[in-house]
Image 1: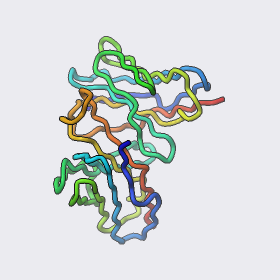
Image 2 (image 1 turned 90 degrees about the vertical axis):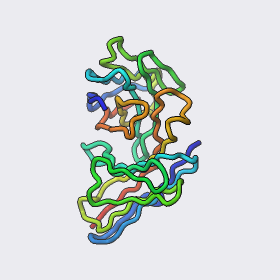
Image 3 (image 1 turned 45 degrees about the vertical axis):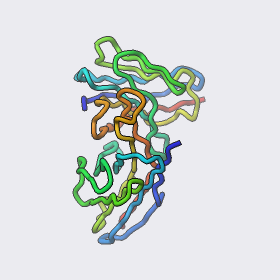
Image 4 (image 1 turned 180 degrees about the horizontal axis):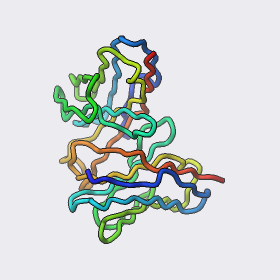
Length: 110
Length: 119
């Protein structure tokens, strides 16, 4: 897995967009970018993944730069329930395991 | 919805005891995983299993063993618990890649976790 770098913590006001950055400058051509989040006292939950193109689902949007060296997870209208640790992972689609780092702790406030 | 159920949310054991952590998934997934999570260290993979009776060491297998006798059940065993095994243990499952509908969808479904304290 390529190494990823995320800020340790971020704050966001409720109702505003939360933009969580991730650097993966050594990502290889067959590695996807995955995002998971972990709400306190629960197991991690899959959010979204992408290879080259931007992706959107009901939970979030994923923007990947053209050179694929970084990406941003966007929660368009953050709520208090989005307070969690967010993990960015670069890995192949068939990798036997995913390596989770320490992630970004997002605090959504009123 | 896929469900991954871990048998105990909280356990307290004594040093030297044998500890079993059980994990059951209900979606016929081939792959199952055991991670431990510690503050500042993120999630670290202990063991994983591709299918019944198959197992592979992860990054930190020392002090642990696993059992996969049935497809839906993956057990983590601490033969002789020690205080440095006090941690949150997370089980996850994943379907074999060929069954995934989305390219590259290396999607793990996690259980709620088991917090083990070894005294």
